[in-house]
Amino acid sequence: MSFLAHPAEDPSSSGPIPGAADGRAHLFNDRTAERYRRSLADGVGLVASTVARTTRPFTGVTPAELAPEISGVDLDRPLGDPAAALDELERVYLKDAVYFHHPRYLAHLNCPVVIPALLGEAVLSAVNSSLDTWDQSAGGTLIERRLIDWTAARLGLGDAADGVFTSGGTQSNLHAMLLARDEACKLVEKETAAAGAPLTKPRILPRLRILASQASHFSIAKAAAVLGLGYEAVIAVPCDQDRRMRTVALARELDRCRREGLVVMAVVATAGTTDFGSIDPVPEIADLCERAGVWLHVDAAYGCGLLVSPRRRHLLDGIERADSVTVDYHKSFFQPVSSSAVLVRDRTTLGHATYHADYLNPARSAERLIPNQVDKSLQTTRRFDALKLWLTLRVMGADAIGELFDEVVDRAAEAWRLLDADPRYEVVTRPQLSTLVFRYTGGPSAARPDPGRPAPGLLDPGLLDRANLHAREALAASGEAVVAGTVVDGAHHLKFTLLNPETSLHDIAHVLDLLAGHAERYLSSSEAAVPEFPRARAS
Ligand SMILES: *Cc1c(COP(=O)(O)O)cnc(C)c1O
Image 1 (tube, helix red, strand yellow):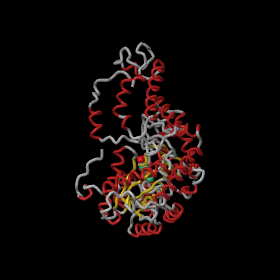
Image 2 (spheres, helix red, strand yellow):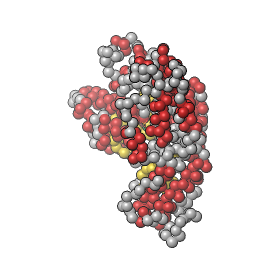
Image 3 (tube, protein in one colour):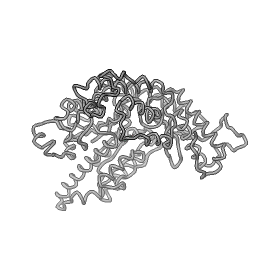
């Protein structure tokens, strides 16, 4: 890409420099500020021109095709020159990357990102504050705290609330489960001591249980494993037809655990399940938790965008009663990865993750009220991700973010109507948020290639499973669109996750036609007749 090259004789250019092997020329400091400016401008220029001419969300490249490009790079022979490195990067990464900004990227919970947040990303990595201690961040610490307070106020958690930014929902859920576990242990220790038969933590852990719906995120189960409870500690509470936790079943499980001498350390309500976007009935769940004296965690990794929605904030009613909440700004606040937070109603509970290290955050600094965020975090060195949200709020404001999220939720409702009326597909639930889970069933179709074959609706479920799997893979291989897949009640389904307001109903209709075309061609091919035949990738 020749537009990247600067005249080599320009001493401030990012082209080859005398003594490129001299690492000091690459250190970012007062003397290299101009080099920094040009180097970043080149990188930004390359990304901007790549995005400007991207016509598909993906090229369909396979790992086998791309691997030689990467392994062919000799990491022990530097190019010395950022322009050359960017040329190479275009070939090994940018050309075939998966682009979430594209309106036909419909797969996972990845959002297009807003420009003020990208500005924040550039600033935070250059200054490189670390948010563990005040003496490594100063104002960064206060900005993060303001955003935690702002989020807690939006949640309605009350004056004693607090929290901390994390790397993602998985980390936030783990953190919340750690606090819930240690609160539960503290309570049981106290109760059993008062009863004259004190139990210590190692004896309590095997009795702990977490109740979460069948549709909850797998990171809850992973957290239980990490916390020494084992995957078995998570009890899956059944869902209703709309994939929301059945509170009758929750009440029954709470009772059963009590009768069996088990300790429910947390109930996890999901506000926006990953597969269905369904929101558990948080007010009823909060009632049950209150009555049972159980910690309520609300996993709003996906649904947190509702906090700023001008039209749908009520869908989060009841969240103000949670003991802890997970929010992923990198899902529904249009923030780049990573940006997430865990919040708690009672800031003292964060103390379960406090450890005073002499070299870093000695107890005396806490006594002097020096704001060291590491006192609340599971991480030590930590990015100043909060800056992205800060600049987003300062430039665009919360309503603008909420309106973008409202738009994708509107679009999902329109897409549901489209799917519901389409005889080629069956759709599982009417979305509360922006996901659609559906399945090609091959109902009446004008485009059926072979009228002599049985109608696909009458075909065996295994064959339809394979047709759905094939349609998804073939579509990704074509690069025309990227959609997700999931298994519902044992059957392979297709899934759209809408997070891009630029995705039109027309895009969605077009992708449905493409998917149906792939599925129909599969059903009329010889491959379909041989169940276990290894499928070749569509090229
Ligand atoms: C995505 C998601 C998570 C995990 O968040 P990461 O940021 O991917 O770690 C947890 N819970 C729910 C409901 C999610 O949708």
